[in-house]
Amino acid sequence: MSLPLEGVRVMDMTVVWAGPYCTTLLADLGAEVIRVESIQVFGPSTRGSIARPSKEMVASLPPFIGGMPDRDPADRPWNRHPLFNAHARNKRSMTVDLLRPEGKEIFNRLVAISDVLIENNPTETMTKLGISYDELRESNPGFIMLRMPAYGNDGPYQNHRSLGIHIEGVIGHSLLRGYTDLEPTANTQVYMADAAAGVGGAFAVLCALNHRRQTGEGQLVELSQAENAAPYLGQAFMDYTMNGRSQSTSGNRHPTALQGVYPCLGEDEWLAITIFDDRDWDLFCEAAGNPEWTQREELATHDNRREHHDLFDSLIGEWTRGRDKREIMSLLQSHGVAAGAVMNQRDAFEDPHLLARAMFEQATQQDVGTHLYPRAPFKMSRSDVRIRRGPVTLGQDNEYVYKTLLELSDEEYDELVSAGHIGTEYAEHVE
Image (cartoon, rainbow, N blue to C red):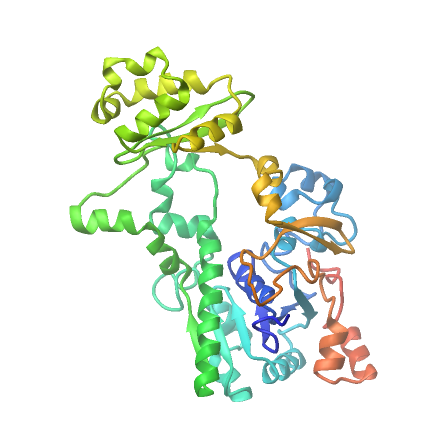
């Protein structure tokens, strides 16, 4: 079965997560995504925080950035970075130094035979590299460029360096998460803005490709990651604009329902339960076997229960404590009560539903071996969307790009190797 974007070539100059996730989705759909990288400059926090971290440093990092096999950076840690490898499937990689004229010439030749360029750097980065959409269009009139800066390509914040957590602070998301007795600084990092931007960017590119198919016209697409994420908080924005209320942290509480996360059997095991109305309460009582405490006067009506929410939480917690979270989840769900086990990574990895749907697919890469990775988030009845290639290593496809696509001779290729454009390891001066 063919893939929807077969025949589309995407140049990928993305960093960290939002941009790489965007190009991952396009690669999953069959686009030939070529990461344009440099062995002379270490990109910020994409293939790691530094080029050559020590084993002690890797051991001290959280799993999503330090979880290399055996916690060992080995000889090429840039190919073992878990955050990078999580979104590096189905892609290619070539290296070139864009800070030198011959590098820019190679870049322009690749633009001429490609369809899309995607980048999510601060606005001034492209300017410093001398890359503009007007110039790209001169090389390829039908070319599409997607720019994904954190806050847009104009305005006071245009050159701010930001990850998802910074963007979430700017749009007010950080204040909506956490417990009421904790400051926002106690929040964990979720990076929802990155994931949202990746999806939004991929959708924008698909629209631009469709427009080009109908008109032959390329275009410049700009996606501000902050503006992309703000609509996800629509309820909070509407509450302010319509009611003048500025929402803040509410813990696990719900504006109208009874809701909480309750302790279960084991260490740090929890179950989330939501009871919307009296009917839900009746169903809960039935599932629990109508214990005596459910007949207390303070819990007689939905309004009573909300008025005594702390008591409600305490009694529910006593009931869940000592019970297996999955067993209670199944029991409550079977009676029509909204309940879900709070899963850790191991729970999710072993979840029977995710396993049944083959959520994780096996892929191999020479510097990390064979592991399971999350697959594309969509299945298509007429396209075989799957991991076709493991996480791409630095410069893995140099020969393909230079010799096959750009038709350089062996001698020309060797000269670029000697000049420091082509390689599979960062230059010694790169820290």
